[in-house]
Amino acid sequence: MAAGGPRMSSLPVRSLSSQHIGGPSSIRSPSVRRMRQLLELTQGAGVGGVPGSVMAALAGHQSPAPTPSTTLPRAHRQIDINPAEYTKYKLDKPVVDAVGMSGMLWIHLLAGRGLRAMSETSQIQQPLIRDLYCVLECDRIHKARTVVRSGDLQFDWDESFELDLVCNKQLDVLVYSWDPQHRHKLCYRGALSLTTLLRQSPIHQLALKVEPRGTIYLRLRHTDPFQLFRRRGLPSLRGNVPALFGADLETVVTRESKGAPGCAPVPIILRRCVEEVERRGLDIIGLYRLCGSATKKRLLREAFERNSRAVELTPEHVPDINVITGVLKDYLRELPEPLFTKCLFQMTVDALGVCLPDDPEGNAKLMLSILDCLPRANRATLVFLLDHLSLVVSASERNKMSAQALATALGPPLMLHSASVGANEEIDHAQPIAVLKYLLQIWPQPGSGPGAPTSGNKIVDWFNYRTDWLTLQLRVNYSS
View 1 (spheres, rainbow, N blue to C red):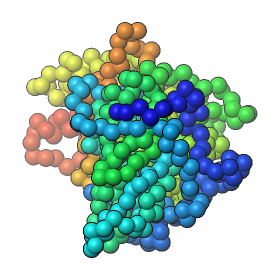
View 2 (cartoon, one colour):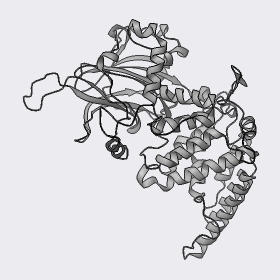
View 3 (spheres, rainbow, N blue to C red):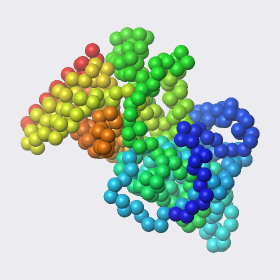
């Protein structure tokens, strides 16, 4: 990695995600930028005039289909890049570090420069107008994708994402050409060593060299697990509006129950997000693993803060379901106390450690009896989420999210708390992942119960009956 005169000291941590790179007119008109963000959030599900039906078909395809968005004229997206402000970077060898990085990685993909295409007929390099989008992968697992942008040599994506890291070592930036009539074609590839970069500094501004030619300009900011899971909470009021993110769970459900007496104590934001995911997201590949635009997620968070009941979550208003799942994970991560309280979480870890291979019924009974000791709002919300997540796992053949994959995405925000870790200890992501994976494996589908059809195997039927009976008791408590 060659030094290119980085000026990292001039980039304050708090302002990185809100900095805007653009011409003087955009700097003088913040309201115009705000309006443009709102318009992008509410764009229809077409790309460059492509019908929504085509985009829907691509969304369920194995190829990394781009996030739906209207391609804007290039003149409106020109970003002024000063190469002297970016450190030149190229990874020559694959990362082989034994230990990866965890936490959250904020990444701002600004632009691509010098992405010259080769004419397939003449074999002569010449500018060609193409539609390109970027895919971000952590250790070869898809994490995010940008909208499609059109251009010849210069492409301005100007999108930011917040990637969950769990022992990840390498970040790949892949640039694909997009055409509704043909397969997605990988055009450029670049890679970053997360372990090397983030141990040097949590903040970077890089000019990433990609193969076979060209440069991707991007910014990185890493939040370590101790900061990410501090669970500090927020003030009770923001401008006379009751807080939602960072507010105590019992406080939120008590406040919301005044407008709807008799409802189960589950926050409206979780109800709304889960309902929309189950309505149109169960077949989306990488559900809860992929993340949407950080800017659009922030706008949706603000809408929930204003009025959770009135937020529009339809495809016309929020085309990307990954924005909705990102808001749900943010809410769980920012609770002042995890949904699995500190004491109860340790009990589930201990219970998992004493599970007997020849007593699956006893193991399940022990684990579910621990969950029944959770506070009222925590228990009701957990049952609601486990019902939903078991439905997601049941569609794993389509969405490719197994119990292991889903537990990796949601176990840490559901259970981790920095305060439960000693000063010289590292946060263990494996424990919450193992606990949630086990719960998803024993949790029956919503609507199942003791009267469900039998399998013909008396031992299996008895185990299913007991597990269903125990979870039924939890659901009764959840509704009471």
